[in-house]
Length: 258
Image 1 (cartoon, one colour):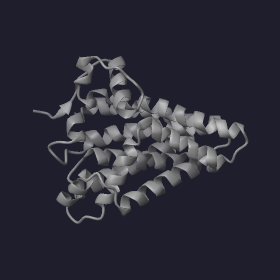
Image 2 (cartoon, helix red, strand yellow; image 1 turned 120 degrees about the horizontal axis):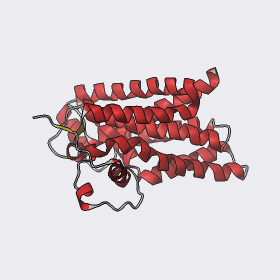
Image 3 (cartoon, one colour; image 1 turned 90 degrees about the vertical axis):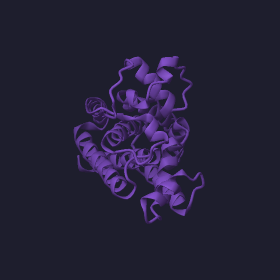
Image 4 (cartoon, rainbow, N blue to C red; image 1 turned 180 degrees about the vertical axis):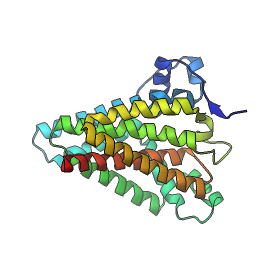
């Protein structure tokens, strides 16, 4: 029997479920939707990145309008996006980075389950936040910043869905196991929806962003498959953060080359 989830609660319910899990927005879920596996809502994952990017765009616009440094505006934007998600993905990245110091899959899984954060995790967060801030700070104005954040926020969440589909479960419990694995058709739908948001940074930016996001996703997937045994919630968080940074890099490169 296939372990892939192809349950279809309807687009509206998919969006509610995705927003309830991926953001801190106060979304009320009907009981039958709340009980559905998260993999049933994957088509809405990229759309759930929209309010996250809008929060970042608003936080960027205010200091920019006041004439404050663009770097400060970008820092506020990243802070607002992190607050909107409750640092869900950043927490996964930190735990994933901490596991890199272990030598075997069992020890890596144990480290990722530990609520404490280590040196690798702290450094990963510093570098991840710093890179996102610097890349967003290159924006010319609030609209430019919003477009970049929309592209990166939405497509990176589609990249998470690819990892959910492609990787086996590393453990028999936990966040990823409870979420389930989306069926191939739903994964492909999600990639298409997420890719549409890349066009906010233009055709060249979209092409480069797709390649960069895919390359980052495949790199994390390969490491997770070989050294962890598959996916966990922390692996999925790392996919989102690393692919988002890669997409931001691609968007900046497109502006320099165009």
